[in-house]
Length: 248
Image (cartoon, rainbow, N blue to C red; front, side, top):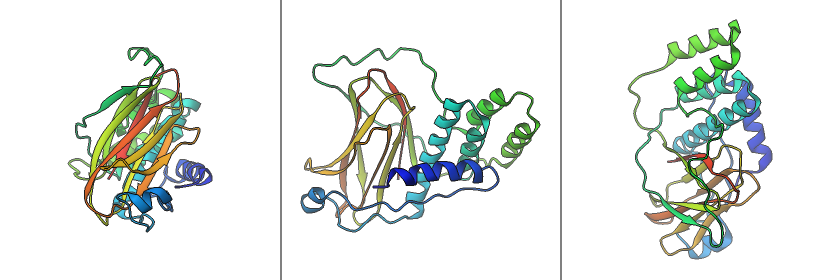
C-alpha cells in the first residue's frame, strides 16, 4: 500500500508539472496482507508498476486534482487533470453493482443535491477551469492549447467507472484478473465522507484493504491464478459520496 506522504507528493507534483508536460506518476505498491498471501488468490511478490498500473494511477491522480480544484475553486488543478487525461485514454464500460445497506443505518437520500467535482472528461475539466478563471489570459491560453492537443479515437486504457455510494451503504463490484499479472484498483471519492475499500477472492479471502480516514483507496496485488475478485466500497458517512473507480 502506498503511504499517505506519497499520495500528497503525487498531487503536488502533478499540479505544478502536468500543466507543462504529460505526467505519468508511479508508486511503489506493497505486499498484500499476510492472511491473504497465505490463504487467498494472491502472490507474495509486490505488484509491478506496469504501463497498465501506471495508467490507472494517472487516471486516479486526475480525479484527485479535480476534487482539489473543486474544493479550492482554482483552475490550475483542473487543467493539470485535463492534461493527464489527454494523454491517458480510458474506457467506461457498463458495470454491474450490488448495493448493501449497513445493518441498523439509514441508506440516505440518493436525490440529495450537493456540489460535486466536474465529470472526469477533458471537456468538463476545461469548462470548470474557464468558469473559475474568468478573463485570466494565461488560463484561457492553456485551455486553448489543451483543446488543440486532444486526440480523437484513442482506444484501450484503464476501466473507469463514476458512481455514487449512498450513506451507510456498501457498493460491491466483481472483476476478473489474470494470474501472475499485476492488479490494481483505485477509488477516489468527492471528499465528503470516509470510504473504506476491501478486495476478496472467490473463496471470500481478504486480499487487500484500505481503511484509512480518507475517501481515496488504493488496492494492489498479483493473483496466483485467473479468477474473480469482489470489490467492496464502504461509505462510513451520513451523505452520499460520488466516486471514480479505476482499474486495469
